[in-house]
Length: 290
Length: 275
Image (cartoon, rainbow over all chains, first blue to last red):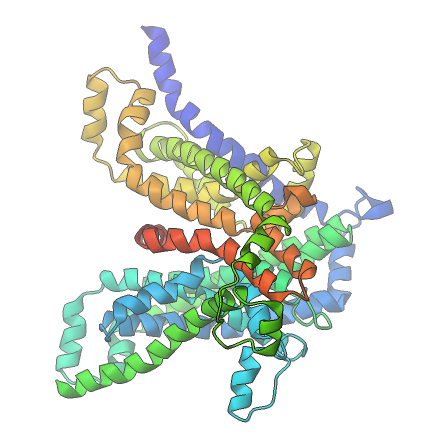
């Protein structure tokens, strides 16, 4: 049956074809298209090559500059966003009383949509809402969480961390499952303090997991806060909570500036590439010194 | 020994407080959803005396949540079914079959994993518009499939790679073609991975707002999460109804979480341990 054998030889290609076709046409091709697009004009200059004009406009736009500044803030906060689930996972690994319950509770917000989380915190952080009522009880004056340009970005990032630390926690716990528990026990028997055990045994033992959580947390901070921004602040007050992803959405969806939006997309991609590579090389070096 | 036991309890106290802080926002919302507007304005914290379930029916009927719910259900079901079918076919081929170009094709799928949606959304919207797919169910389904396929292919490939090749050889001796092996052997063997990946994809699609906003702009095509954002403007002076809408949108995820927490965590960590 030569026909049958030929069909059999083609079978692997037939099986991967739908996946590869969709990925190439709707993921890789748009990436090239977008980069190309970012060097053309909008409106009257649609389709005409304009060189670096869009990128120049981006750097002159105060909103995009705020978005970049906020990215810097996120990168600075990244170690905190990784340390929180890491520390909690360590305690759960040491089986603090109630560790099973804690694990289940902490992970739950991570499966909720940012829109639902944002909607809930709109109520909680309202000027006359519960958060300020609690602070008022402690004698601290009300804070305009979402209305004060100096506070709002921290409020939104805080909510994001609250909602997503469960993801990192679960990944850390999976890492702990591969850790040699004899090493940890030996350190404890030798009288090492908790901090010493974490620093000298757990951190080196989990270096791959830590690396993974760093990278995924960074991707989360830079690409999954749209829902929160959209429902909580709409980029305000005074544009102070803009992030590149929100800027892209506004330019594409509201301002009808697809070419400018493409330039912002390309910039976001480059930022993520640079931050990601920097992280990996920094963490590798730190790992080698241990 | 008693000293470490004491310190364990000392750590458990802040962890318990954090657990309360994690769960309280949800309980607060559920409580508000059961109040009347008057009760809410007078006192937002007190436990509601009588449960005003009518807030839920108001949100469900007059706020259009029923329509949004149905839209989400249709789109998510189709997207997840397609993701599992296409992803498991590719995973079987890339993980088990030997053919020219297989590692290059796997690299193509892997590379797409690192392209966030925000980076390609402008040209993607244009491609979809050229294909007449904007504001249609197939368009949104296709956008979801494209978004979550790299992850699905990656996980299914690593799952199928661990299947002993002897099983496949035995099936071939019994006269199965590659398609037969896929249908009779690989699909049943892959069931646990398909369940995990399926739930995770369902959550991703159900929770999405950006892709949906971009692909389904018109009001009667809104998915549930976009519906929640529109609810905010609509019921800004009727917080209990707004909270009821949020609650309705959260309940399906809550139910899935209560029953399938293990599978969700497995899906999340599979990427970490195999990456």
